[in-house]
Image 1 (tube, rainbow, N blue to C red):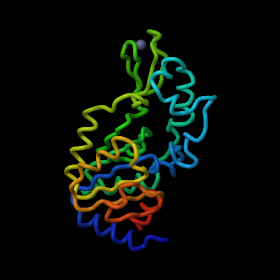
Image 2 (image 1 turned 90 degrees about the vertical axis):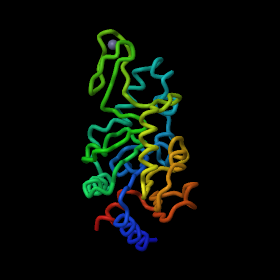
Image 3 (image 1 turned 180 degrees about the vertical axis):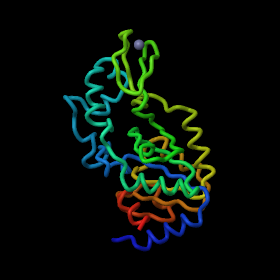
Length: 235
Ligand SMILES: [Zn+2]
């Protein structure tokens, strides 16, 4: 399917909307070469140095095997060389028109900011801030702390709660939206699924390669990767 009609409809919806909120997951960064976690070729399909990635990304593991955690972060999740794709760039343009008010992302790669987006809410933290868990020293990259404490990135690890302020900011944006675009996420994980309950706007658009449990709520569904869809929306 080429989704020609859906693309046209989406363009019209965007023209008619005044408060667009974008909610994105790993799928928005796949074209930038960042591994998806749960996809068919995602990170979770393989073990790393004998451990499964979900285990590595837990506080318990960081405390026990910091070196393997760092190596994993550096090799698999760090994004210094990753470049924003057509999807990220499209959202920058949309923000510049004044229609897109917020991007809520589950990604920690910082690619929206790298592309130039301003109002980005990072549900799971980021890899721009690192701090020592013992003395609290902070840097914009990984470092060995003089105090000998364990240094970790400012990301939400498995088993850790999300930042309440960040969740509340996300809820408030979703509540205000007249158009919500969700992309690159299967919407199965908290808080993605619960955020949708706050949406009370007119248009709900899903751009995702696989079905989600919220498809029946959507006004428009486009089964394509986000970057590819973005190129069609810009052309
Ligand atoms: Zn320290």
